[in-house]
Image (tube, helix red, strand yellow):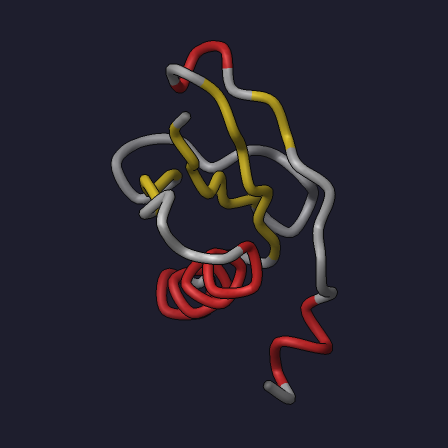
Length: 75
C-alpha cells in the first residue's frame, strides 16, 4: 500500500506538477504522515492537503484526517 499527500490551493483546487504531491513513507504513523504533509504544505505555500492511500497514485483514495491543521500547528 502506498501513501501520498496531495496539496491544495486556497480555492480547493488540487496543485499540479512535481510540487503538488509527495510520496509518504508507509512505515510512519498517520500522525507523522500528517505532520510531514503539513510541514511540506507550509514550506511550498499551499493551504491544505489530503492524504491518499492506494496501490498506485491513480487509484489512491482520500483518507480521513486524524488531526486538523490547527492541531498540527500546536504539535
